[in-house]
Length: 304
Image (cartoon, rainbow, N blue to C red):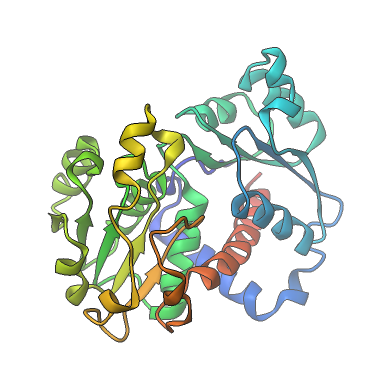
């Protein structure tokens, strides 16, 4: 039985196979419409979510399966003090596969160690978000026709941004990847990512504070919001939240073929006037999330 807790749980070859499968699902949805007939996905969301939870549910329904679960810890037995370990043991009696989101780092790993069914990490605190990474990779692969030989700008909250951490882990395995890390000093990438992931693997990167300085050189701009829920006090959040706002004016500095990605939700870090720019693909990215989660569900159930 296999789980997906980190992007590194999939080899590069398995990842490539998954993306090919997702592309086929996009092109031939009817071919997969009954692939999961009679099977159930449990969505255990201890933390708020729109895209991740609904795209998992849409993915399983598109495959002919059904969905059960909860969207708030308060509506589960966690409110009574039940542990994640006990919850997943119970869920294993009811479902064939589980997607779990939890505010505590490592919660999905704990669940996988006690589970009788495949577990998918749908986000654990500020740590990892592997299915968002799969979504990001499918978006880039589908629109750029490659995953290597690119300069990727990561902008905003790089300290707490689990989507950023997961994406870096995944992309360093492809050749010719260079990162430009754009953030205020208070929200710079964690030391363990800088030292143990980027430097240890000899991945070229630079750290900048001004978005305008990075834009001319980027193939991909990955914007993130400053996450209020990760801050310990309101004052720090208010000071940081408007540090970066991508506008049409700033985009004049960027290449015509640069892609703008965002894991969403957006607050105000991308002006709505940018939405009509052909380089803005973040809503298309949300659609790709359904295809790649369909491919992941099929893959993990096959491995079970």
